[in-house]
Amino acid sequence: MHLNRAPDSPFVNPAPSSRPSPQPPVWITPAQFQSFTETGTTAHRLASSPDGWIERLGDDVILSHKNTTALDTLLTGLESWTAESLWRPARIFTRFLPLKNADRISPILHSGNPTLPLTTVVTESGVRYGLDIAAGYSHGLFLDQRANRAKLRSLRPKRLLNTFAYTCSFTVAAALEGAETTSVDLSRKSLDRGKQNFALNDLPTTKHRFIADDTLDLLPTFYSRKERFDAIILDPPTFSRGNNGRRWQIEHDLEDLLNAAIELALPQCAILLSTNCTKLDPITLERRARACAKSKRRTADYIRPTPLIDFPPGHGSTTLWMMLR
Ligand SMILES: C[S@@+](CC[C@H](N)C(=O)[O-])C[C@H]1O[C@@H](n2cnc3c(N)ncnc32)[C@H](O)[C@@H]1O
Image (cartoon, rainbow, N blue to C red; front, side, top):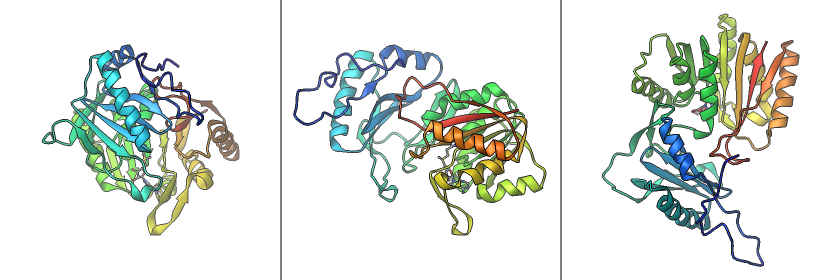
């Protein structure tokens, strides 16, 4: 892990106090920032702490915070960090992270030109992704999936099934390697943004399907139509309400999803299993995935991705690659 606290951060040496001090943010170094930029990546975290984090998104940053202490700490830290790194964001947005999803709001502009557009384009290893800061709670790219998108590219799949596809970042990664792809998401709007991501990378959408439907209904349909895939992405939300108001919860329904996916898997298929559910730690996820493979009489190797330099342990999703034999 190469994460460092900014040496001049005022939070490195917290003042003595009778109360436990909040854990200080961990910052990437200016050299790591430089390295991201030089390798064509302009979307990554700058800082992480238990109560908030800062994402660099092209020329801008979004500071996400759970409380005002985290907001103030990260804003002051950003001042010190930008002075050292000589990079200054054009705009700083802040985003409150409420306890309840229903209370979520879009980021608000803290500083910078209010007349600039709220859409922007970022790159990841040179691949372009469109973001919409005003779109709501999520801007369009989950930064913690960077290594998994790279891994998918390195596998060079021929037929990808990307379920819970959102803005189709995994689909773009596979399509750039020549894959035929199928992207499934309940949200037509997110899939349309996926198509825009294809256009941003000069990828035609022929050979690519974008299906607005419930993944849990479609997997058995693909099975009965004898559709098979050599890469499958399973990155569902923790809770979902699908067709006919059906409630679904990863913690309880993981096996239904994974078993249905394994049935669509060609030999040598790579299945990515990813979740933000805090009850599914890496060991539990792998144990349950192994049980599914066994029940379907398949064998597999299991790979946990190498941690990202801008995500300290405990930040980002829990992911597992199931490499079927
Ligand atoms: C965590 S995001 C997926 C992120 C995506 N894998 C990525 O890396 O960009 C969850 C997505 O699942 C979609 N979704 C939720 N329930 C669904 C369901 N039952 N069937 C299909 N999509 C669903 C949501 O619309 C949302 O876009």
